[in-house]
Every structure is written in structure tokens, then in C-alpha cells.
Image (cartoon, rainbow over the protein chains, first blue to last red):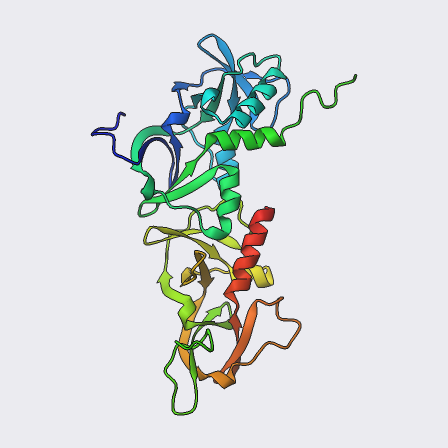
Length: 188
Length: 158
């Protein structure tokens, strides 16, 4: 779906991943493409959410299981939706997070691609344009913890519906910082 | 409002100063809050998941488009989940917190000099700022600053 109307000042395009009463906003600028996730290969050094790779335009791209992260983090039930992959060009990341990902990717034999990463989702996706002021920061007592985890804010879209705004770069980077370093226990 | 006492919300009588409190119940226990710390009472709001929160945070609620962390003081104080759907929306300058309660009992005005300081050592580490007497009950006044500080501290540790 393409948003209509002129580009509003201070507004941004988001992908909206629908998980029922809770949905998630991901900045369109963080996504290069979305494709059906048809086949994955296990990584040689699997991590909790970074356990597989997929072929994207001839390159083997690491897949971060954002769907599992969302379900674990927000306590959401399993979905029967077909899995999708959001493809992100890591050149949109900040320098430190880009390097963090590239160092991680180069440590895996099966992930030769260090320029892109895929985020697995199992939900319907829509596009929406929102003004920045429509998103509210988390309650102050929880703000620091949530921002650090990549949860930037929220918005009550309608009665009985909440949207959380996510920073997939921060979510991925947090997981990479916590990861087991592949060569950590290797001899010599 | 008096400059001398932060809890003062009522016009004084001839020689006495009065403070106004909301008395509410959590389970079968009564507690009180200074009236100026209460924004409103709301019923039956949808509760949304709030990740990385300590267990006594039951979720996030929507009040006029603003997100409030909904705290279960019974879980915080007694490690027992409260089954209820009434919330006190707190009026805090620097935080957005709601308290899950069983019901509202009454709003009382009490003479300032009958508000007792907390002297017991078994009153949950500063969670109460004092106590008032209503009828035959001594009712503890919740210290929302301490509650908010604990939430902030626990959230950082999750």
C-alpha cells in the first residue's frame, strides 16, 4: 500500500506489522524490501534470534527472527501468517552498529553477505504515514529501559489497539552484543 | 494550596488546617493518597503488554492517548496478584503511573495534625509517607515517590 497525499513535514512512513491488539511500527527507511520467506538455512553458530540465513538476490543473508523476539518480549501468541522477511541494508545503520553486524557476519561461514540483514515477521504488513507527534514516549519510569531495547514509543491507534514503534537496528545490535562470540571457545 | 505542607489541599477552618485524601481498597486493605496526587479514577480500561517491566507492572493503559504504567501494589507489597479493573491515574509531574485498586472507599478531609508519621520499621521500606485515621481504621498513605523510584530502579534491572 502506498501512502497518498503530499509528504507532510515531520511525518514518516512506517511499515505496520499487525499482531492483533498490539501492532508494531518499523520505519520504512530501515527497510529496503519485503519478501516472502520461503527457505532458510541454519547458521553454523546459531544464536537465540540469529539462527538462520536466507537467499536474497543471490546472496546469503542472515535472518533475525523478529517475530520470535516480539512474541517473547510482548508475550504474544503464535501466528499462522506466512512468514515475511524485511530486508535491511546495513548502510542505514549508525557506524558502530554497522561494524558490529559486519564483524558478526564475517565470523560465520554461511553468512557471506555483510551488507544486508533480514528480519523475519509473521504478520500482515501495511504502510502508514504518521506525524512524529503522534507517537508518545514510554512512561518515564520505563523509558530508559525500553529505548535501550529498541522500543521507541507507542500510539493508541484506536480503542483496544496499541502500536509500538521499533528500532530494528537497536534490537539487532542489542542481540549481537549479547551473542556468543563464535571463535571465543575455539582453540589456538 | 499551602506553601508549608505539600499535602494541603483544603481551606483551613478557624484554627486547623485540613488535608484531603482519597481512601481506596486493595483487596481487603485500605490505603490513602493525598488528593492532589490523584488525577482521576477510571474503570475497565484495556491493558496492553509492557515489556521489560517488573512483575508488579500489569501493563500499559491508555488515558487520553497517553501511556500509563499500571502498577499492582498488592503484587509489589504482598506478592499476590490483584484481580480488579479500577485504576487511579496518578497526577505526577515527572511520571505516568496508574495504580490498580479494588475500589474507592471515600474522600476524607482530616486535620493536618492528625496525620501521623510512620514510625514502625515494618512498613515496606518507605512505601508509606504517614497514616490517617478514618472511623476506626488507621490507613497508610502511599508514598508515590518511593513507588515510582522502585519502578524506575527495577525496570533498569530487568
